[in-house]
Length: 89
Image (cartoon, rainbow, N blue to C red; front, top):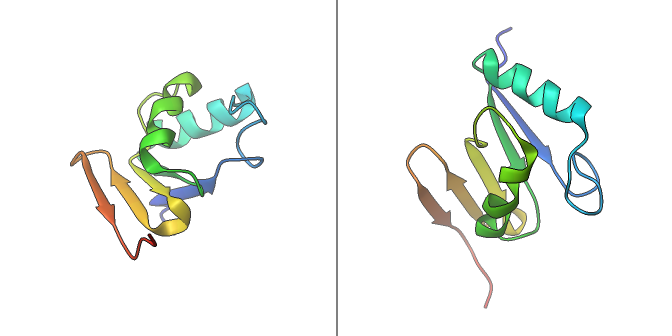
């Protein structure tokens, strides 16, 4: 089976409480990206907020997909588009 996408929760899963990421996780994600596997992150936070701090992780490229607001926002990096679904007021 060919792995196409790895999508991970970040807060307390991939990152520490200060939103930094350990070197082991950075190395693993970079290995995926270097092998052509798409990588994305998901959180209850806003997608645009997530885009701001992924720069600190020193990945070989930005996550291709960022899912924010518990699934109601999807940022697609390649097209630079934000999609909004079923947002509450």
